[in-house]
Image 1: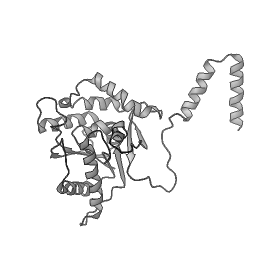
Image 2: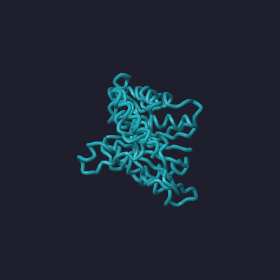
Image 3: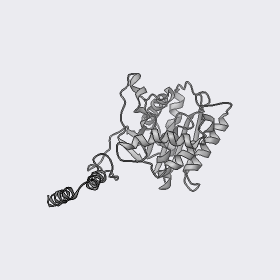
Image 4: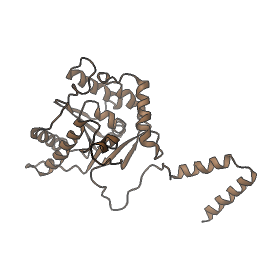
Amino acid sequence: MRLMVVGAHPADAVDCTGGTIAQHAGMGDEINIVTVTDGLDSHSKGTCTMEDKRDEVYESLSKLISLSVSLRLLFMGLKDEPFMARRSNVIYLVELIRQYRPDILITHHPNEYAHWDHAEVGKMVCRALKGAIKRPGDDKWWVNNVYFFATQFRPETARIGYTPQPPNVLIDISESVGKKVKAMCCFKSQGHDDEEAMWRRMNSMEKEMGRADGLEYAEGFISYYPAKEKVLPMSSINAGFYSKAKYEHIWDLGVTGMGTTGRQTFGRLKEEERDD
């Protein structure tokens, strides 16, 4: 499987989908990371060069992905703060999509506000996706699976008049969140050099993203296209407020605090449930 992640700034791909990248790489999938801007004007603390930013991306991804994985890093090197897409930028992305033919593409939501550059990149990618199908050539490519980072689902999005969209896909990153913390701490030019502070950030964002659905840590995504199946898809993880695991946990907690009569009643109820 070929995965392409398009981020506005150097840290965006790791910040928004680092755990997911690590898990796809662990399955042997091809990883393509496209960084649109140099991030120098919006995400730099102190003196920093474009080469410094690139080195941070390389170091960060080395914390997520083993050397045996097929990894390609592509830097467009455009200016940020503000980033304004030109026609030539869209056509360049069309060429990348056609050349590397991703099965899955992940990028910013075009109606996101976490940073204005994010929305601009999201719009540019959506135009490139259409261009990869419509523009002349024998190498047309349709990306069937497109996801937006769930950073669109924030109060700031509503403040500028857009409707926040909740994620409809959650990826359980509980096994890779430690790698993500170390990877994010490579972006020292953005002040991310304190692992304890980064864990606090994970606990307020990635942990909260998964909490309501029974996941310890999660990255959220919003599908651009609806899932297309011949039968209804089934989640591979049984977790959440109404999951079997939580239901049994609630019963177990109830039994712990019961007296003899309560335990007998509980046992009868469980027997009746099995009979049903």
